[in-house]
Image 1: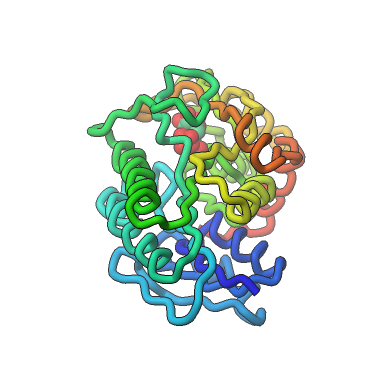
Image 2: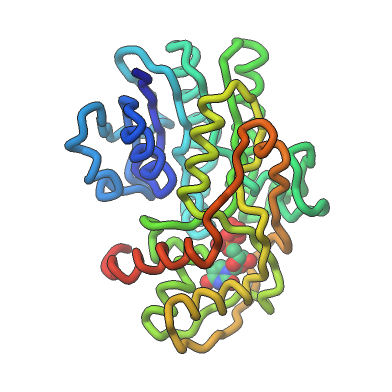
Length: 313
Ligand code: UDP
């Protein structure tokens, strides 16, 4: 039986990973400091055999007694609003937190998987983005705290692989949506969905012509679990190549929510990437993986969750 540590396990992605691993028969140790995650995200798992929830800030120290087969390092503020409010914590968890999580994997002889991000590509000058593109990141802009923390985490992961022979993997996660996102996390889908459901104006940044490619959380988790079980080092893009403009996304969310909210326009945030689309050739070939949930079907489920949880903040 595999035993897997998930840092940030009570966050949006972490909680879906914990749930999937428990269903697959893993023992799961979920570590979280609950800064952006919440125990409510894993409350349904607490009674399961083999699930352990531990309050822990991985930037302090990580101690997990007993054997560990996998360390999945998912702890980090991840939405622009969160990392703009928590710039130092974001840099610390991407650097010191990654150091501690790698140290745990080294100590236990475990496979280590770093949750990296499409943000390492910054405002890309190559489109779509394949893993061999080095990116176009502004280190001193407000988003730099997240982008550079993840880039440092990737470098540290490769150093542990090369110098300490730790079995490592890096996944570059593209925009993801699904149940348990926080309505107020500032990302486009939670913002548009809650605005549409409340009949409030939908706030599109700029003229809405910037693009994103958005994957449903179930598809993402499948890709990550396959990467964990492979011997691939990555970095590997996991995302849905279906690309659309933010204005099209706003209109689609409004339609799925059966809302008549007006669309309003607000200034674009600093360094907001203009385009983003994953090249998933590598994941297709190495993991025999590709996304299967289309955007509309995924949005039905995400929007239903926001409708059913109006009080979540
Ligand atoms: N966005 C928007 N309105 C909002 C929130 C976000 O138009 O209320 C835009 C944002 O400027 C960006 C896109 O939607 O162009 C995706 O933003 P998100 O924060 O979801 O993800 P990221 O920028 O990290 O890809």
